[in-house]
Image 1 (cartoon, one colour):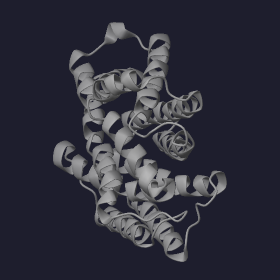
Image 2 (cartoon, helix red, strand yellow):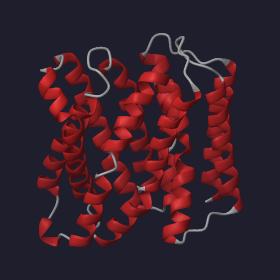
Image 3 (tube, helix red, strand yellow):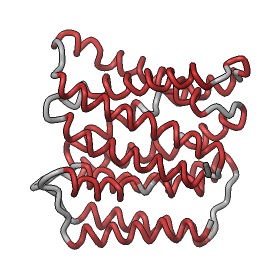
Length: 286
């Protein structure tokens, strides 16, 4: 499978995971949700790693990079995504996350020596403009929020983009995206246990429905992470990052289909069109 196809599949999984968060939040508080989503992803990743990875070829430096990345991604992104989803709804939260290619390309320039052309820079500018329009349009489903709340998905986008050069560097040393996901999710599981494990123990068992929904979120996020790693192993960041960044647009469509009350006004639709145009320009200019 090509890097482009893997990146698009990752985008679809990320989008579905964003929408399913809304179902989980109906019965489980946001602070508790990463325990199930990240833990579930870690279990899935290790099942695949045991089945498909030859650990006799393990590269210690690459494994340490994957573990280090896991202290931040996906755990920090999961926490920020759930909180922004809760405050903004999946449509806006995902759309603001569309600035991830900006951070990914900047990281590629600073750390990997990649040089985007004028067309790519123009595409990135359109993506940012589209996000700005989406941020200005107001809430869906009657939601309103203070301006600072936009920092939640923006921070998630920064992390998602910034870690991609590190992942690509490690995959060049040891091209095992399944192992990368398993090691990274293990680190993230340890982090979320330290953050929320004791509180969850004191509160008691969570609602089974919420646990099920967030386990599904973890399943799709885990699949998306694996597909992202695989895409980065085959293609350049300037190809993979824009395609993965389609996930906010897919999340908008899925939220309109699956969630009642999520309706976009004209300005929001314009923001989506501008963002899509930016991604198209990025792809044509690569």
